[in-house]
Every structure is written in structure tokens, then in C-alpha cells.
Length: 208
Image 1 (cartoon, rainbow, N blue to C red):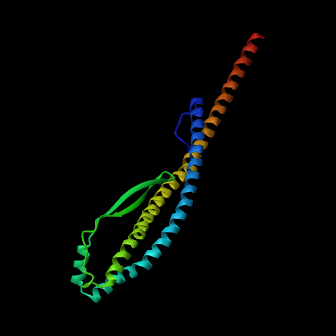
Image 2: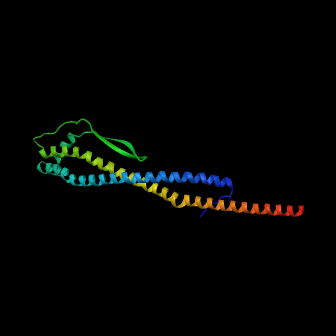
């Protein structure tokens, strides 16, 4: 389906310029799509590996809390955790991957408010707290990767739609319209030439 334009030389020149820009844009978007797909594969693989590691590690982290509660009591364990409460600061930064802004999370811990009695608490509680702190880095990395994969996937879909629109709709319509205008102009030129030849023939006949 061609564009609804007047078949003039000015329109033909304008469409040819637009076609050059559209083809250049299509190539750039195609290159971007290829780059996005490559980066998506890398991050998706890392996310899958990280997710499997988190799923495997989480039961081990929680196990020490269960053991600490079993060897003392829930009330003592909760009091001990309350006494050692620390402020957790999650700082969100960002960086760009193929023009996509992806998150980068960094964590830091504030000073501990105090300590708990080693006599009334289980040694497993120490392991549980240390294990949870170490596990948080891995957990946040998983969240970071999950959001990165989601954002890249969204950008891939948007870029693919634009590539397909240019490749299957915009560019073909421009090509068809340019061909139509060129045929119309050729037809008009042939008609004008024919009329001029008739006028010339009439004048020559009158001169004779």
C-alpha cells in the first residue's frame, strides 16, 4: 500500500531522502537489536546461575536460625536479634547497556546497637547472622540481574517492533510510492512529449 501523496518531482525528491534516512535508521536499529540480544543472553545466563545458587543457599542460611531457636528458645533468639539490630542501607546506582539504564545495588551496614549473651544463646545464632549478611550480597545481585533481564527484554521487544515496522511497512510503502510517482511522472512526460510533437507536426503542415 503506497502513501497518499501528490505525484510531483518535489515529493519524489523528499521521499527519496526519507527512504535513505529510513534505511539508515533500520540498519542502526538492527545493529542495536543484535547487541541487545547478545547482552540479554549473557545476563539471562548469569541470572539463571545466580537464581539456582540462591535457591540452593537459602535453606542452609535459614537452617542455622531454626537450630538456634531449637537449642534455646524463640523469645531468647528474637531478643538477641533485636539487641544486635543494624541499619541496612541499600544504595541504587545505575549504568547503561545499549542505551538501557540498568540498576546496580550496593549495600552497607551501620553500627551494631549492642550484643547478646553468649551463655543463653546458641552458637548457631552466630553462624546464622554471619551467613545472612554474606547471603544478602548474593540475594541483591539476583534482584539486580532479574531487573536487568526484565528491562533488556522490554527494550528488545520495543526495538524489534520498530525494526519490523521499518522493514515490513514503512520502507516498502516508500519504495512503492516512489515507483508510483516515477511512473506517473514518466507518463506525464510522455504525454507532454506527444502533445509537443503533434503541435510541431501541425505547424509544419501549416507552413507547407
